[in-house]
Image (cartoon, rainbow, N blue to C red; front, top):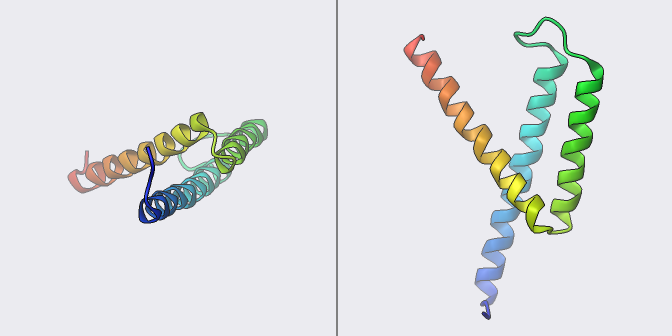
Length: 94
């Protein structure tokens, strides 16, 4: 159906927020991988492959491909849920 200008702007703003959160979460995950937080050794190949994977998703997300938009939203929500779980575990001391 037809959308009003306000609806289009609101959807665009919401999608930009998802893109920013996606980029921030990719940077945090890369930082964790590089500095071995809790892991004995991480291979450089794994870091490069993950950055290529996230780069491809970001590229197609900027082209507004539906599957890439779904993956970006999924990845952002997954990281938010994991963040809350980590906070709960730290608070409860499990």
